[in-house]
Amino acid sequence: MVIISAGVNRIMRLLALMLLLVSSLSFAQTPKQEGSQQVAANPKVEQLQQLNNEISSLQKEQEGAVKDGSSAADVIGLQILNKNDERRDILASLISEKDSDKKQLLKEVNHQVVVINQFSTFLDEKLKRDQEKLDDAKDADKLIALKKLAETRQYSTLILNEEWQNYQWLEKLDKPAPKAVKELTSKVEHRLEFISASLNFDSQALDLASKQLKSATESEKSALQMSQILAQRQVDNDTENLKQLIEIADKVGIDTAKYKKQLFEQTGNVTDDLLNSKVIWSIASGWTTDLKDWLFDNLPQMLFKVFVFVLIIFAFKTLKNIVRKMVKRAVSAKNLKMFIESGARKTRKRFTINAKTN
Image (tube, helix red, strand yellow):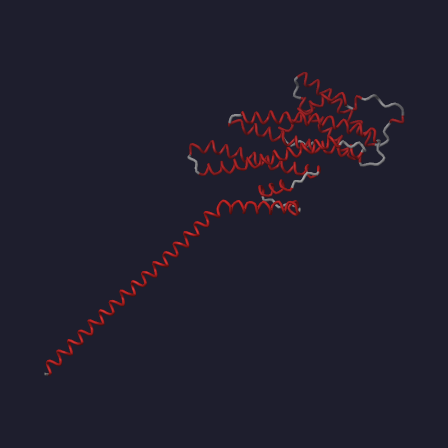
């Protein structure tokens, strides 16, 4: 396991302490092999035995450091976990070889199953504690509490992947564990649903905080900015965790189309997953549903607005026609009056001329 941050190192230390609970299962404590027939001819097996011995020795050192309250326990814990990572790499390589000693490998893998299950149980409990600390934390301490929760959740997801790998190894060694695989599948499904819902909730909280911040007064901005930062961090953490869970779910055989759709809508990133027919159908179905919902919510109002608009146009057109007729009538009446007056003037003028002539 890689060192990803100081916080993860702390988690690694705690996880390493868990190894002490299963130290009795350490292969370094198994009786010494007798005779030359038990000497591993394969260099990788020798490396594996050497790592077992080194881990056993480190566990003793760490136990002493913990008793003495020494800070060296952190460093030793990290070494144990790194050594276990090396051990898993060698195991993976040996399992892929046809001529490996299956009995010995089965022992090693069963030991990994125990260790990883211990880690998983410990992390599940720690997740609950970290969530409670985040809920109870003051505003000034929320960022630190959120960081610890995100680190624990990330490490817990990595453990799920190693747990799946353990069961794959058992299957290759002709010792499948279908019940354990079923339980793991259920656990991954539950985690996917939880993180998906968490991402939806945190995205809405981020949108709300951003809107409130735009219309906030100067005195309100400080608290709202903190809320926005927290919401953004939670969205980022949920997005990253959902990506990792989708990778594991694909290996386990869970349908992840709707979660990939959610990731696409959240990040806008175009990946190879979008070429999957199920993902394309999920996105198209989602858009169709959104369109139907939008039409259902807005169509009556839109139709009313169109009706009012048509009514206004019709009213103006009718009014225009009425005004036009009135103007025509007024103009016609005026012309008629002018014609009568003109005729009258001409008649008077003619009558006057005739009178003068006579």
